[in-house]
Length: 159
Length: 279
Image (cartoon, rainbow over all chains, first blue to last red; front, side, top):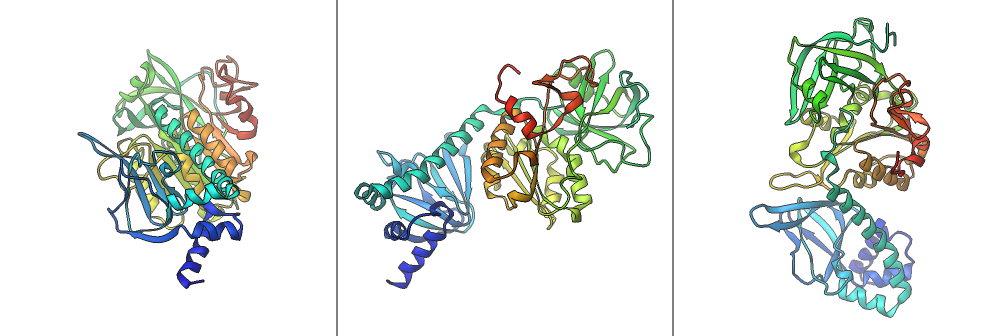
């Protein structure tokens, strides 16, 4: 196995999002992975473009943004080391619904979404493992969105 | 803490008033005359009943340093008639004070453990006395982490103090806002999301939580997921406190009275009642 490939294996195996995967599954996933780096200000993805990748952050911070006329870019979430950028690759039509911009020099593993979807279709056990990881992430982000939408800090507290 | 008559407000003067946010003011007031003058005369987490004469009385948590016994500090958001009247008081004006009342953050029990302070919005104010004490007695604790969330960068309470604490090397301070535009370079997202990123040992962590009740419920869930024991989590509750001595029942919450048994509660005693809409 080439050195670069082995390194990707190790990185994927050590990433907390993939904790508990079998070696065989790590090998399958790693075949869709490659190292990427972004300078501060670089975009990892742009709204409307094909969601053909997602990212496992290894270092740095990324802002998820939506551009609003007259307001510039509205940041609704920042993500850091150990977290995942991108869930739009999971469901058709596989288009990004927001921008993702590196706030500082950022290193990540980019996962080829079409490659991974194909492997999940061919191996439903792998697909189930992926769903077990992504569904809690989606629920967690849904709960966070609810909390943000409620705008709870407008309420008086104590004082 | 000695109090001559807990139902009788003592008349004290405002020493200083400071604007924190557009509707939030901090008042520094004289302590009640029967409070100890040369020692901590309240415990972090406790509250006073403050009277705006001719308007009414409201419960307000201490927000100042417990070591500074010569002045009591309260941070107040102007949301109703009484709190608005209090925020309009100026140095030299008089107000009524009854207290201190209520339970305290369990800082002695947290010694030797990691301490995770999670605050939302104005909930940072009741936690600030605890933070002062944690930092004053820093060596007694393991890792100390403050996670603070609020609506936007313009709504950050005690901003200069947060910046000062961030510069310390012995405390991890993380601030997040729900929404941001422009030049904000900090975190964006809800404060419970910061818990998964924080560095603490869940098996030996004490968590102190204060903020809007919805935020506290989400924070509780995140702390449980992180593995913090329910008995090691404390919350500060807000209810309609009137007498402050456990007689009138206005602040009943489940089987407890917030003024008498709280406002700081251990989570396992409170958690069963938090989702009950009728309480």
